[in-house]
Figure 1 (tube, rainbow, N blue to C red):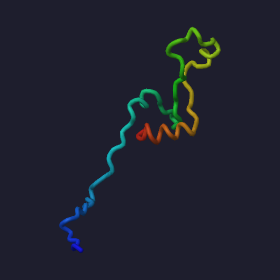
Figure 2: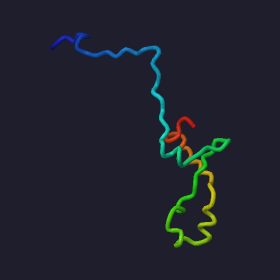
Figure 3: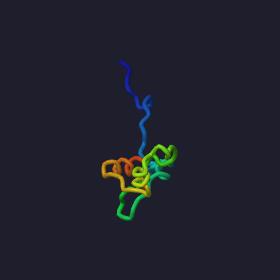
Length: 85
């Protein structure tokens, strides 16, 4: 059985000044979502880009402006897509 010398194995050294790498914001998410002053996630309504002639007037009227995302979806967005927000 061969002897296990430390020359054969790489032993990583941990530097005291090492830090975790920076978390990047997803560029698609920063174009689609914004945060309110209280930390809630604001989002735009879907299905308002094309094909509006087939949508009902009621649907188009209700889809104006923006709305607040649900808490469970907002948790996913702020953790994974907007970590620095």
